[in-house]
Amino acid sequence: MNSLKLLFQFIFCFFIGVIHFPSQAQNYPNKPIHIVIGFPPGGAIDTLGRVLAPKISKELGQPVVIDNKGGAGGVIGMQFVANAEPDGYTLFLGTLGNYSITPAMVKDLPYNVQKDFVPITQVASSPFIIFINPQLPIKNVPELINYAKANSGKVYFSSSGNGGLPHMAGEIFNDAAGTKMIHVPYKGSAPSITDVIGGQVQVTFEAIAIGLPYLKSGRLKGIATTDNKRLSILPEIPTVSESLPGFVLKNWFGLSAPKQTSSDKVQLIQRSILIAMKDPEVIKTMNDLGLEPVGDSPVEFAQFIRQETNRWQSIFAKGNIKLE
Image (cartoon, rainbow, N blue to C red):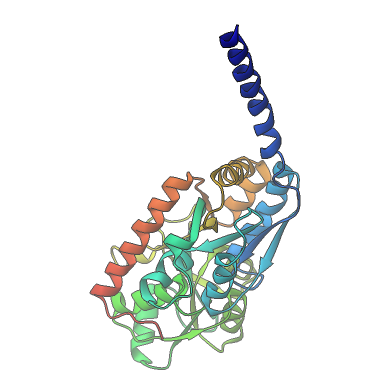
């Protein structure tokens, strides 16, 4: 009789636990989720975040707010998230530069990317376009190289900030082409590209998303892409590798959370992003902006970040590229 009583109590407790667990999971989210971006509004990553936010919001049933905390090439925004509560309400949407390049170059960051963040998913990747001021007498990469060499020390390339991929793209181009274009960092992609249009600087390596409207309006000229093949949306623009074999660079964007964020919340957010990325509006927008959807798992994204960091450490060790 006692054994039957114990069995009944075990079964009762088991079913109470099963019923109770989903109710706890359903408590999240119950307030707005903030996605922090370490750059001002207007850049490619900002565009991506604002395209995805309403779709993620629809899936999770709570507002998803984009918070732009620009400065120091994304370090300010990333530090903010690293210090946030690990409750799933503060996330970081960052770039290759944030996750791998800056950590590979800077030893005294106020956080450790691989220890202070929980990777959620790599959202998308995108090549760059070399944009120039239309007034320059340049039509392609060989002409840019010749012009930069003929005007050594007088040609400037802008970027969204020290240590980001636009900065590194210019430095690696200098190394591969034997040019000495001078880097001018800005606080974000928008002011960087504005000064190329205005003629304060002559060249920038920038994402399709930010430069495409100006390319179509004729306010910028695109002379090459950094992909390994020509882009379907811009087939007339050659690749850098057609002139400099092996020159391929892609930026990528990924979402993460503060360390100790629970795995159930991470998985819920990751699933919501995968669903959002299947939305026809999101697919069309990403295609129009030259973004390639990824959507890997948290484990895969963590491994990818480590691989990319090691790759860039190797690039810096072999070359003479230093943070200004």
